[in-house]
Amino acid sequence: MNVSKGKRLLILGIALVIIDQVIKILVKTNMSIGDHFSVIGNWFQILFIENEGMAFGMKFGGAVGKLLLSLFRIILCGALCWWITSLSRRGTPKAKGEAKEKEPVPTGVLVGLTLITAGAFGNIIDCLFYGQLFSASTPGTVASFGGSYAPLLFGKVVDMFYFPLFTWPDWVPLLGGNIFFDPVFNFADSCVTVGAFYLILFQYKFFMSEDPDSEKGKKNKKQTGK
Image: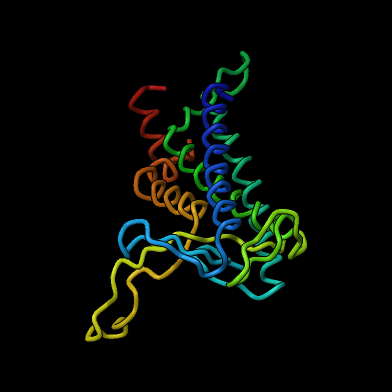
């Protein structure tokens, strides 16, 4: 692996997880469920809720779904770490006589994958440990360290970012009276979303031409005469 590149990615991932956890702990230990305050007018608020399921407040199959989702997140995070490490190694010198190494992976691809991985890991921490580290948050009670409200893997994910940008006019079919963007989410969700959209919008060519035996790869070989 390119050591300097690997270190930068690791530092980026750790920094994102730390930011996510600092925000969550500050919210959880200073606000009760449902507490909120405005950051910028009425369209950007901090609203404390806890999510027992998927990102953006969605739920998934009760206790069994919660367990499966937590396990899936752990497996996915491990797979992403392995993939990023594998991609980071491309382009490094190889011993004489070994097969030629693939071209280095664009830094943008690695950064996008690191964002997704850091976000997944941030929410894994909530599920794994928050139930054992904190007392329960309720509409009238602020949580504190040292409690235990749920077993391992069953902790609740802390959400707080709320952007009720506007309410659809009543005359709009199906949407009238509803808030344009209703989900409450956290910094980790944002990392996953930004990383995924970045890869789709700006790095899709890498994933389309990743196979060295693809038509693009063969065309490049013919042009270079190699």
